[in-house]
Every structure is written in C-alpha cells, then in structure tokens.
Length: 274
Image 1: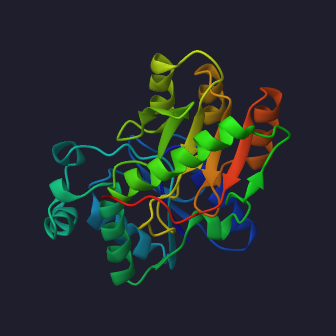
Image 2 (image 1 turned 60 degrees about the vertical axis):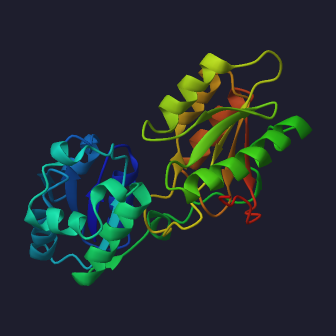
C-alpha cells in the first residue's frame, strides 16, 4: 500500500492498520505537510507536493498497488507548489485557477488510476472512522441545537457543491462562519469573534455532494473538540456516512467531559445552488 501522507495522525494509523493486516507499506511524506514522526518507522521518501513524477516513480519502484491519500494538506499557490512537468501537465488539462480542492483531488485520483494504482479511501481501511447516524456521546442536543445543525448541514452542502469548503458554524439560526481555504480549526476560532449572547453555536461538517469519498473526506479529531470548546460552541454535527472521526473513543470521551454533544446527521439530499 502506498500512502501519500499529509499532516496529522491519520496516515500513521493507516500504515499501522495495513501492516497489521499483512500488507507492506510505503509512505510518501509530503514535504512541509506530513508532521507525524510515527511515519519514519515505515519505508518512506520525502517529496514536495509538486513532484508528481517522482511520487509516481517512487510508488512504482516500491511495488505499490493500492494508494490512499490521507492527512491535512494546506493547498499552496501554483508558484509555491513548483510543479514538475508531470504535475504541470495535469494542471493544464483544465487550468488550476478554475479548480477548487475537490476538482484538484479528482484529477489526482484519476491520474493515479490511469497509472494502474487502485485508489482506496481511508475509511475502507479503518472502518471505525466513518460517522454513524444519531447521538454519538452522552450529551443529547436540544431542539435549538438540532435546528442549528440541520440548517448548518444545508449551508455546508451548498458550500461544498460550489467546491469551497466542508463546514460552517451556526448559532441560533445565524451562520457565524463558513469554511474556505483556512480549514476547520481556524474557521472555528474566527466564529468566536461573532458569537451572540445565549446558548452557543454548532459546528457542522459535511462532505461535498459531488465528492469522491475515497478522497479527502472531512474529519475531526481532538484538536477540533478543543477549538470548538474554546470558541463557546456546544456541539458538533457531522454528516453520517460522509465524515470521519479520528481516534473516535478519545474524541467522544473528551466531548462528554466538556459537556459538548456529537451527533451524526442523515443526508436529506438538501442543499442546492440557485
């Protein structure tokens, strides 16, 4: 299994699970993004994001068959990416300026499959990652919280359809913040600047309606719980089947300890651009 690794703990967890299942692992650590020292125990190479030809050659040289993309990657500008000829050729097919994150990831996935690799989702390897429907911890959201959560899901799905972001913060029916290139944690911190009096808001995360679920499913972890609590939010709502929780037991235990709810929302098919 080839793992193209960004930041966070997910790539190392995937490597460990694959190895325990008897599958050899080779890791491509994306320079400036992959930050987990646990990955160094596996055969690996460090390459910059724009070195597409070297990434493909390294995975072929190490007999990779399955490939999974995992971890946080802050999307750089075209110049900062310094694309090699292979990456430049890929980007020129549609023009990078016209692509959001989902469009770019789809191109990467298609290119990997054209090269003969089998694209695998992180949730296919770690089956406990995917959020299930219903209350996930000991705290049950009240009617206002569920109203905010459902409204947030509609907003997040529209935002995702436009290939902008995967989440928002809603308090008492008001959208305090939308996720764009800054990512979830920074969006949550920003939402605290606009907090209203009264009961706190809700963080909502959703995959994009058009998204290939093997690529970049939105995820939360302990850091998200801590940031949401600091921002005065009282819970997190996640699209069931379309989001992941990293270190599920620890996340639920921490949210319970902080008095925050976690809930998986069903996909109602809502959220369409006008």
